[in-house]
Image (cartoon, rainbow, N blue to C red; front, side):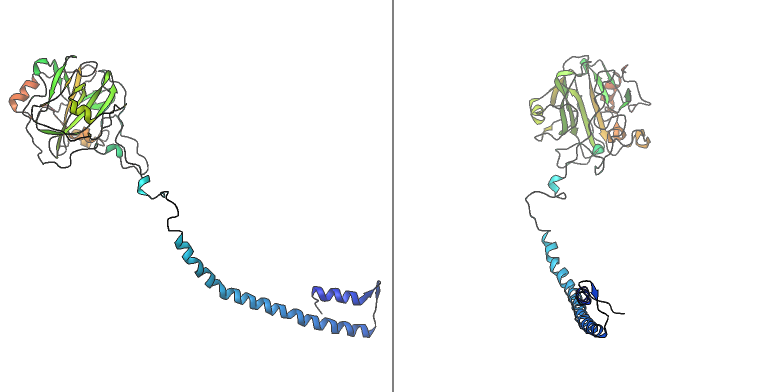
Length: 336
């Protein structure tokens, strides 16, 4: 059986039928045979050509692929001044913990750094920014886990009562103490040589705003005052921008204070109380084993604020121990 290529078939058809007639004589068959055999051989040649072309293509393929390799490397070269996703400039700086602003029965802000009623929500890539210590201006520190406070923090004759920690305000744990001065303007002194470590100037209660100030005594010990209404000018200058919350930042300039040096005056909150808290990183109080609070460094390292005074000076504060109806004690006191 003969298989005819397209062009040969058309030619045969032309030769086979003229004006619709078919010639069946032997001479025509022989002619057809001669016609068919020669084109089939000619058709076979392109097939060999195609095969050869395929071989050439296969041979050239690796060369073509290798030729593109340098192009892929060129894509790594910067083509724009815009930073890529991996550029450190686009990595957001972690923020510190935002404190809840719910009001306490006492009128104090609902929670402070590390004192909210629940651990801050975590987010991908975020390093419990929320539990990181506040920004600090102190480049170095000296180790002293047992310092001695030598000066009173205020004029005790103007103090109505002091409230030892811990207390609870609604659902918020308060591991710091309170000083109740009944809205009287009182001086605030540094109890020991200290450096202003961090703080915040924020709007709450008092129309002029209030200050949260954290001071470093040593590598291990810090103390804090909150609801300060009249810091000295250098402290005001160190925190020039009023915030809507109590997230702390480093002061704009480094400030150190001698023991007994006045750092402020205050009338406290609109209810006349202000905070005094002391924290020691070598101490683990009972909240360190409590999953409800052990995420907070403030909660787990808080100590009795007057515990670093001499026994004589401590007794003067102990004589003023009292309580607040809006902040009932939360278990055993830190102060004995």
